[in-house]
Structure formats: structure tokens, C-alpha cells
Image 1: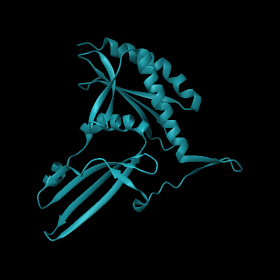
Image 2: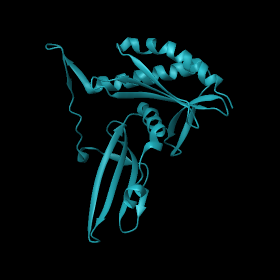
Image 3: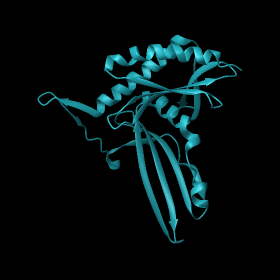
Length: 215
């Protein structure tokens, strides 16, 4: 097990990051974590609010000495790895994810040519307006009998082909009243890798239901 390849690629990426982001007049940054079981490199741009917008996470398998990004196989309904065999594949993966990130940002903002001001588009979606073909049944993510149940369901918006993730949170209050909170999240095919990678990279920092309930 060695980090020699990891360190070499990290150096190459630092040299390439400026050219990757310069087309969009952005300054890209890298956050390197060597302490994890699978070291990772997180890429982000800064915002005006001094926050970070992450657009790519690369992970490194030190036993096989290979970089990879995490994806999700919709057909098999399970996570999968996309192996990046050489430095060219790594740079191209970062480049592609950054462009997808910026394209998504362009869909959220538009420019008023008369005022040269950016305005945020109204992205509010009414659940009743979405015609979803559900590909899976409700899958239970967490359950405590007679207390709480959290389920997820995946489907495809028949109008535009977007993926739709439906979350239902059911809580039993005072043993009589059932409170049901439902929300949906829509996304394009190209966004899946970034979403999964960002979650996988930070899952260890999350607090579970057990910790909340036990408190």
C-alpha cells in the first residue's frame, strides 16, 4: 500500500486546476484528505458568502493504487465505481464535472441584458404537477415500530426524463396522531455522480436517528 501515485496525481491536478476553471472565470480549489481509509480530493469554488460549492470528489484506493469516482447504477439499484486509469482520465473527469456544475449554475441564473444584473429563476415545483413513473416501491431507510418510519422511492419524471427521489417521513405522535412529511428531489442524469460522491465523502460526519432518539 502506497500513496506515491496519489501524491503524484495531486501535484498534476494542482497544475491543471487553473486551466480547468479559467474558461468560466472561476478560481478552483482543492481539499486533500490523506487520513481516510480511502484518501480523497475534493474540488470546490468559493462563493460571495465565503462558502464552498463542491463540484467533484475523487477517491483513491491505496490497495489497488487507483483513483475512482462513485456513481449509482439505476438498473442494478446499487452504488458503483468508475475507475480512472491514468492522469488523463483523472483530469478529464474533474474537467467534465466542473463543466456540468457550471452548466447547472447557468440554468439557475440568467442575465437581464438591459440591466446586466443576475436574477435567480423561480425553481419552485408543485408536487401535483409532476407525473412520475415510479421505478421502485417505497424502500424503508429507517424504522422504529410505533415511532418513526423514513422511506425513499425512485422514479422518472415522464415529462422531462428527470430522476425523482421521493422521501416520506412518518412520525407517530402521542400514539394516536400520524404526521406525514413528504418531499421530492429532482435531478438530471449528469448530476448523479456528483451527488453520490459528495454524500459519500461526508457521510461519516452525519448524525444518525439513533443518536437523536437516545439523547
